[in-house]
Image 1: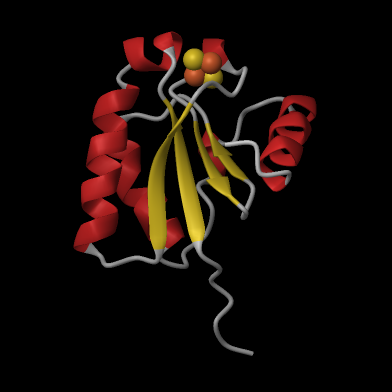
Image 2: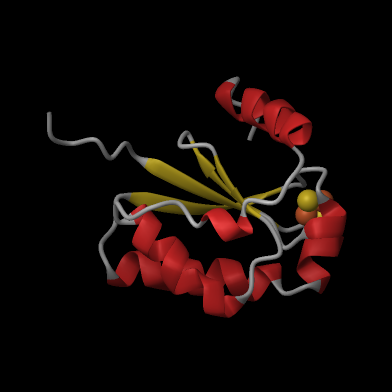
Length: 111
Ligand code: FES
């Protein structure tokens, strides 16, 4: 079967802790890179994932990839994964129970 790529939304936390670590710049750069590749993905701000000590945090929905402590130099790899490459597992460091909570909120449509 082809077409395994679902529409993806990249939520980039824009609350104070993540912002103080550069999440606004990350969101802008990710938006540009996604547009430059014409990927079927949307980049959106998010209010807070509750992983404030480990940000900047980016969560890909509905694929359920959580990237913590993201730096600008990580973005090319993240974009590759959005284009169908493997998830960037080295940035997947968040506690599984927090992930569960956030993923169920996103699945329930709480943006
Ligand atoms: S400030 Fe980003 S997860 Fe809370």
